[in-house]
Length: 71
Image 1 (cartoon, one colour):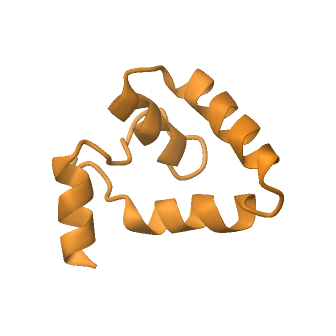
Image 2 (cartoon, one colour):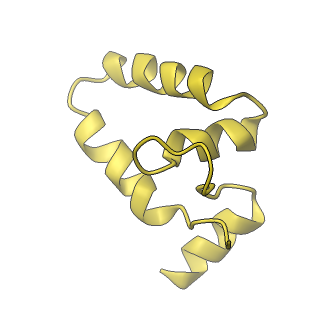
């Protein structure tokens, strides 16, 4: 699990401490791709609506795999 966290942290995928609503996944994705958290959340929800049931899998998996930013 440590290798996955390190790889995601190196690529810029990390959950920030500020701007979190639930787990910080969308805020981290938005920061990584250069958009603010709210449009990132909206895009995430819209994309997940295309694949029914994926909301129950994708967000928790990303929450577990994405490391938190160090304080």
